[in-house]
Image (cartoon, rainbow, N blue to C red; front, side, top):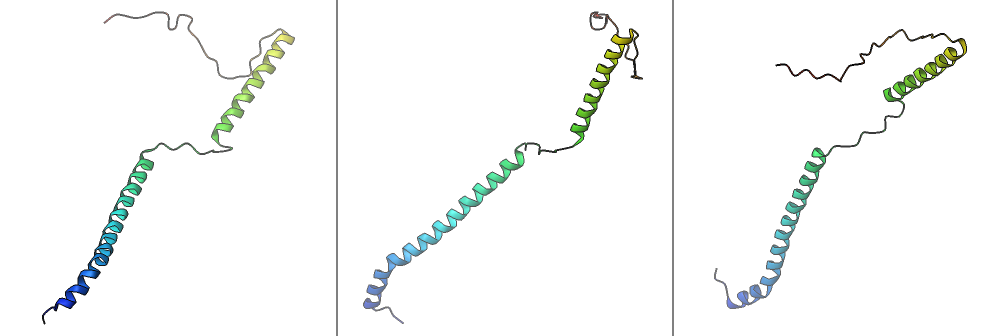
Length: 110
């Protein structure tokens, strides 16, 4: 089956429409590829980021703070009793021994 000149004439008039359709398909594929790359970069950045700690509310930190507050209150009470009675009473069962020369001497022997 041969192509008649009249058929070529109709094909040539439709060629620009076919080209535009083909070009829009390629552009759509390229746009999808660019968006996929951008999404991948965002996810990689989110993985590498250090996230802020969430608010824990009433947690272990609060318990420690309350314990420190209780110790301070006990010390203040103890100081008040010492001043009133004139005797040193210590309710803490722990005793810390400190060295007055600690951190003042440097040992340079090899």
